[in-house]
Length: 191
Image 1 (cartoon, rainbow, N blue to C red):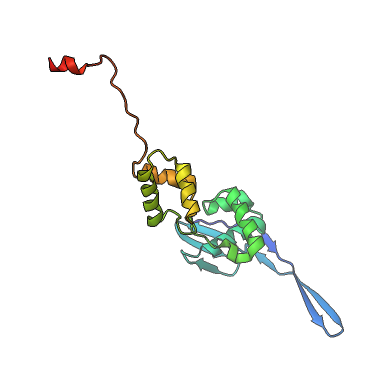
Image 2 (cartoon, rainbow, N blue to C red):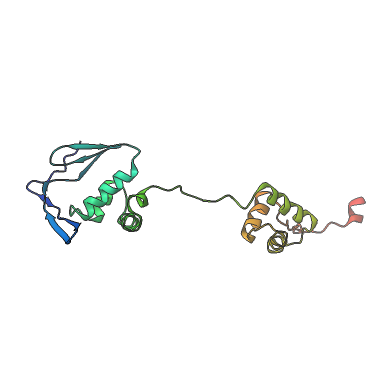
């Protein structure tokens, strides 16, 4: 495991407590000093938070804790966004995005989200059958016209989706190529 400890470095956290009392408020300042608190160490897939008094192992599947530790190091430990993000294999841009999400939503904003489409596809089996049907009924109809007919009948679909279905099933118009060179006459072939 890599040792990331820095000699002689101290982290100071100032915590303000405001306690409402019957005749006013009481404000206390707590100033604990911790040596090397919050140092994130990553060795392969294992991640560890190392502090002055012990070690806290992070679960392999706990992405929120890893991201929170990265933000803590970048913002509170003075490591900086680039170096902190590099520890998790992220970019400075992604670090900034995660910091913004954390500021907006707290730890819930650091949860990884599913990539790709979030909703159901508009190209359902029924819609694809309708596109093929319209194409066979009128082979000269453009994808724009087919999309418009579908939307008029209550199928919300874009022209590009219609183009994809037509291409997927090979329903494009084929252009007939005439052979180049000499034309053969019907009567000449019979002789």
